[in-house]
Image 1: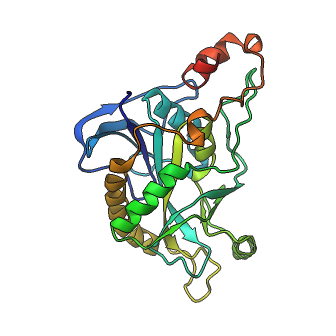
Image 2 (image 1 turned 180 degrees about the vertical axis):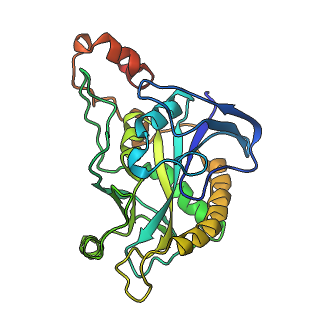
Length: 286
């Protein structure tokens, strides 16, 4: 049986993973360009980990400039079967306090300028995205959060905006009427691409603020955000260490065969360059 390999995409505040053993740095290129940074690959609790800082070391890359396709494609090249995304978010509900952890199970996409699929260039694919995160991985992350002492909410809707600006007050109030739980800038199209690549994906989201809808709490302050991020990052690392020990040996979730009935284009019609570029993702179906 193939070795379990877990990808960790560190968001704001999470730029490295301490405690890895047998560490090596891996630099990759993809048909879609360069990932955010080199991968740090090692073992954590006996499980192989491929860590990538989403915004690059030193937080150099804006949410709108992230090369999501290169990041997920590179994970696929490394043999990653599970991706744990870590994200800083704004809370859209009174009951989700700054410092709380949320494991979202739904997304609303309000991004405007991002390529959100590997398909195109002569091949069409339509994955199911009704349930956009891996239910198995989400449950494991929820339990791991509880076990490390986090105040954690299982399920919730993550609204992804383009950024890099925070919301206007009018936008924040509008989004609240939609019933969303948290707001961020990075989980889409990350989750969509992971599903297309048949990689299990789930998020550890930490609320750092109340966006700007909460008049009593004040508007978003980057100083407060950074303070809460430092605390949350420690909890996230502990939760990840706990979670990787509980991953099943075999994936039997919807993610593992997401492309089985998704490819529409006839095999003979797919251009050779596209076949070559997407071989790690679609090769077994062609």
